[in-house]
Image (cartoon, rainbow, N blue to C red; front, side):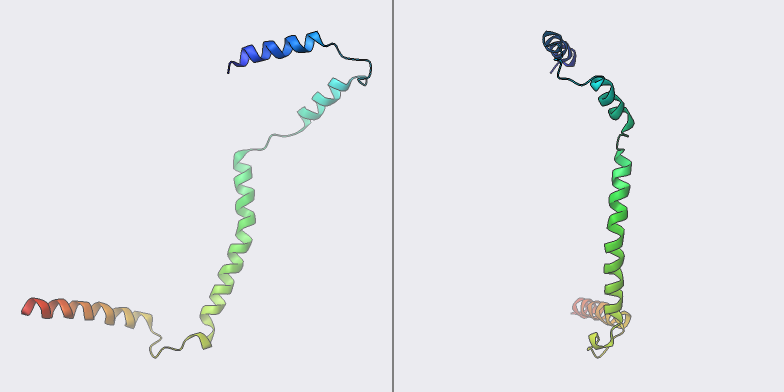
Length: 103
């Protein structure tokens, strides 16, 4: 769409229809002053506002999960040392590969 052609068409339509007497005095000036007084929203400002609003629920979820992980009734396994469990798993896989390569 050509912006210049659209602008010329709209100006021609406005000139063809002069304002009526029912329009209040200085109505155009009040509208343009109100439009000029409003600030335009910045994209960065919108993102920052959304991220700040999202920070509160994220902190709440983090605190709830942290408290849940420290709750003692949750740990029902024999070995609660995760590093030892990982080491045993990796060692079992290595030992299995070593036994397969011997035969």
